[in-house]
Structures are given as C-alpha cells and as structure tokens.
Image: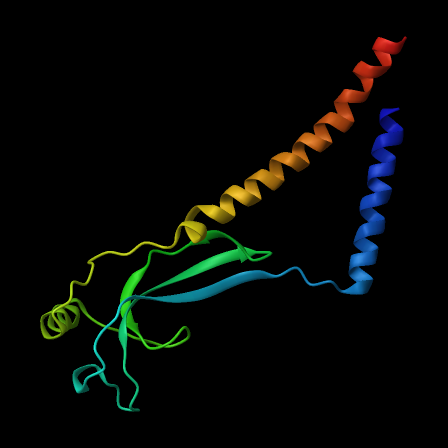
Amino acid sequence: MKLKVLSLLAISIFGISNIVGRARIPIPYGEEQKIVKIVDLPDTEDFQLDDGTYFDIGKMYTISHIVWLPYSNTEPIITGYVDDDTYVELSAENLKEIAEIAKVEIPETASASFFDRLGGKIILGSIGLVVLYGIYSSYFGKDEDEKETA
C-alpha cells in the first residue's frame, strides 16, 4: 500500500511539473524596494527639489518575497520620500535641520510594516504545516486504518 501511495505521489508530481513547465506558469519571487511616507512636510521652497517636486520624510527597505508573501526584509532607513519609487538620501544632520525648519518630530528609527515583518512568514509557515500534515497523515495514517479493520 505504501508503495502505491508513493508511486502515485511521484507520478502526480511529475505530471504537474510537466503541465506547469509547458504552460510556463510564472511563480513570482524576488526582491522589492518599498518606500513609505511617515512624516508629511509642508510644500515650501525648503523642501523642494531641483525638478520642482516636493519631498516628505519616509522609510525605505527591501523585502524578499515568494508569491507576493514577504519572508525577509532589510533594516529600514529614514529617507526623503518623493513617491513610491523615488527617494532622496538624507544624512542625520539633514534630518535634524528639516525637523527644526518644519517643526515636526522625525523618528530616529523606523520599522517595516507588520505584514512585511511577520505576516508573510505566518502565512507561509501555515501553508508549510498543512502540507507537512497532509504528507504525514497520508503516509502514516493508512497503516493504522488497515490494522484496525483486520
């Protein structure tokens, strides 16, 4: 019985991999840079760039993801936020000057969002546990049922 289950599992995996390979279904994975606004600055000349756009204060970090679920991220740094794709590098002295001019409080440290830090790990871990439980119950659960009926 175990041999039948294992051979059926191997054939299924081989068949699915052939179908996915021929269909070329992409599995999204990689790294993504996130820039999030954390402090809104007034739109004045002091906070205007050479191209005429204004910047705010934001945090920037990179996440590693598989199927859009983040499993790792870098330490966030405080930057100038222009939009979701553009940022301005700022030193600690620049941040102090900006805080004094704009009369706002700029945090010294930042953290990634809850989902980027833990959410993806929780979901990916749960999926992994369900898969492991399914494999365990299908492989070891059948023998106990056969012994009880005999």
